[in-house]
Amino acid sequence: MLNWIWLAMLIVAVLVGGFTGRMPELTKGAFETAEMAVMKIALPLVGIMAIWLGIMRLAERAGLVQLIAQALRPVLRWLFPEVPPEHPAMGAMVMNMAANMLGLGNAATPLGLRAMQHLERLNPHPGVATNAMCTFLAINTASIQLVPTTAIALLAVAGAKNPTAIVVTAFLATCCSAASGVTAAKLLEKLPIFRVKPVAEAKTESTNPIPTEPEVVEVPPPELTGRGRLVVWLFTAAFGWMFVMLAFPDAANALLQPMGLAAPASPAEMLGKGPVLRSLFAVSVLAVPFLLSFFPLYAALRGVKVYEQFTEGAKEAFGVAQRIIPFLVAMLVAIRMLREAGVIEMMTRTLTPVLSAIHFPADLLPMVLMRPLSGSATQGIFVELINRLGPDTLTSRIAATIYGSTETTFYVLAVYFGSVAVRKTRHAIAAGLIADTVAVIASVAICTLVLG
Image (cartoon, rainbow, N blue to C red; front, side, top):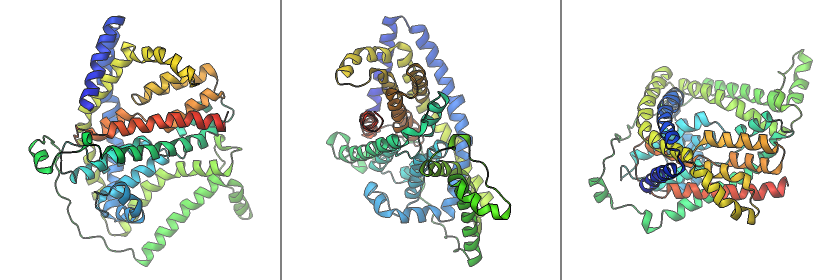
């Protein structure tokens, strides 16, 4: 499917650009995007991936990934029945989902790429997406959002009186999106058009260059001693206290005042907010520092050589980025050519009368059409919309909810599948687009009911 979609994007862009006289802009945009994909996306991603792949290796060697997977085994076995319950892929997918829910995009992508590598080692049809991969990608493109931080920040910058009003609407919309994405993935995988060939036949056609060496069975590290457990509890309690200071500053000050101390002042954006929003903010602030310190500490207490294992995991980052580059360039160049040719503008003008007849705000259409294709372009359209209409209008709040509850589906698929050289994506695109469509419809309906 992706072959035909990519070819159609190129042909439509060139034909429309030729008839509208935008060939120079189309050509310039294609080369600029090719450079950007390598220099501003793939290479900077190496550093971020090095950190999280190193941390992930520590978590695996310390047995934390297996513990997380065991805790969520019933849900994971239903979502990914073909993945062994004790396989490292389970823990990696759980950590990726948790990072997505907390809005930690810098952590979610490397963890997701690690999960894809584990899933590829189980793949009997190299180069062809498995059911587990498609379901995992559907969950990624339709992840439940606890705090849509970027959308809230953009509303606040535009002067919104209550930028956090979209927290509830985005959460509900992403719940609808996630449910529809998983359901679509499970139903589509059963259709004849998306079934894979028998293993023997598929292997003869494989051209996948990704090494799929078998998992190395290692001796598990020793269990924590009594002193080690005490250190873990004390460290966790320290972060628990940090959470109290951020989420419940009045209670923290009441406990500290008798000792002549005071809790740090809350950030300006949290002044006057309720305990629920302050709690979500505290979790989003503390999550990354906690993971970056707790995993190495736990691994060290279990006898893992943390520096050696961290650097061993970080070494994989450059290889992953190198494999992503061709897929990233191909997809982003095609998307930029569509934009420069004016295809999105033409679709907007064509569909506006139809959408107006069903009471869908026509101002949202450019952003909705661009969202599966480009995150930066969508953000630009969103900023222009809230500046033009005002950040506190219903349309702007719907737009913010859509922005916080949808994903750049084609970009995500290009990065994740590109990291393991999967070219036949089967039903992953369809499931992702279904989830995005449901998120848009849910956003309009929920915002109209809750905020209208």
